[in-house]
Image 1: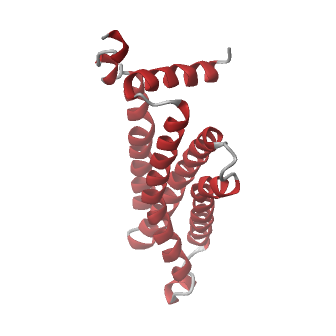
Image 2 (image 1 turned 30 degrees about the vertical axis):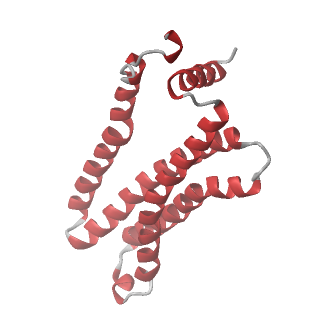
Length: 179
């Protein structure tokens, strides 16, 4: 059996034992959690995207040097791609509504959300670099962006990977079938 299927089967078994939750109920819960997470992230992306659109028509925009223009375009494109990736699970759900594909939608939605978060990290870094470069200079922009990217890798990747390796606290719960 492929590893991915084994992991899904094991988590389905765990959820059935400890939550009294079958695979379809789990898919419904996971999709609801995914949508809630996307709502939080998407609001910030919309605000950033709107700010960037207004910036392009401001007086100060004409004063940007070539690098700043490049950062602006990269940040704008990154915000657009991030928005597209974060809305994609909702669009997929609409296209596949009532077709008994919830588990597939959750898996695809997870991948799209992860890609959206990766794109968001790069977009935030480009936006920070642009603003710091304009406000306090290029060196400060490079330092600030390096710090942001480092913090992002630690908080978004390394800490979750560390937590993933720890045993589940819920695994210590008594097995309801043991009674």
